[in-house]
Length: 377
Image 1 (cartoon, rainbow, N blue to C red):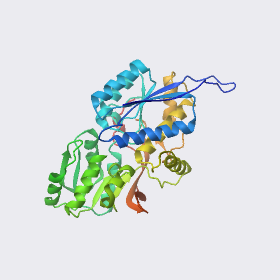
Image 2 (cartoon, rainbow, N blue to C red):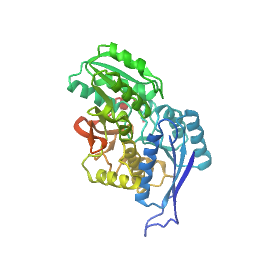
Image 3 (cartoon, helix red, strand yellow):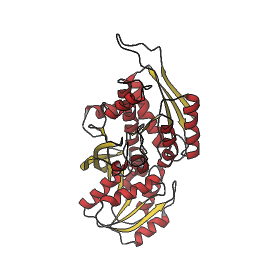
Image 4 (cartoon, helix red, strand yellow):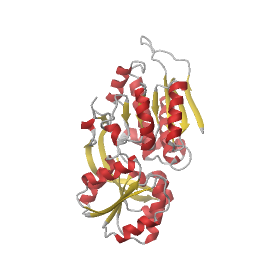
């Protein structure tokens, strides 16, 4: 699938100011197959910000990676070599990010991640041109481990898909969880049948279940778990309880606690306006992924207003400054170009006929990732 969206017009410099060069962005994201809803939300959040900014100095080229690393690599090569993009963004899945980001940054391109935050890119594999606008993969899971302690949970059964973000997820949960593990499982990426895993949970003696299963994987697991009769409290990250998932899961998600750096009820003007305008534009509430796409675009605009993308050092400094109104409120990058931010505990509720989340606590405040000390740049 190919979609090109261009925001182009005759560029006019402000009086007395030097005109900046146009910026060309290549967005590679998942728009078909399993997990397409995540990529669609990132794209829609990003493009809403583009529409609102009304810029005449930006071109965006959008391609579908089909959640396949080889496709993502081919698209990145085409965007860099043929399309001559200045900035890349959009990737949802950490295995795709690991296949694309190091090669792109090595060629002098900037990469702004609106989602995937694999630990190697935060630590030893960090790069001056790589900025993560979402989180480092472990972060939301660390907050869940801290919440489990506060909730008095002592013996968790934990599971996640067998790919980089899944491994980071369980590492993050274990980093701050103070109890014992009744079991630890890595499932197949894209798996839809969890009967065997639920049987193991039932027999494990666990007092709780922590799982990271984004997109359709989470929908399948939650429905099967609810039907199984296993009556253990669930804890998860936002990825399994996000706005695009909850309507498909329904009552099985009610009351579940989950962790996120964003929610629609964060009280600041930028977030209130984002939620209202996203719903008006697309006819649905925004998701976590949409908020990240929106922030990524606005970060880019803040750098474009201060520096020419052709001056890599100045543009990099402008990105690092992160002088934009984030829907999360306070936003800052650490030295490894990953966010330092609050992470909240949310509860799944129902508003009328709509399932959604509300913030009930702050899980971690001004939280940075565990890999920053390994980043040498």
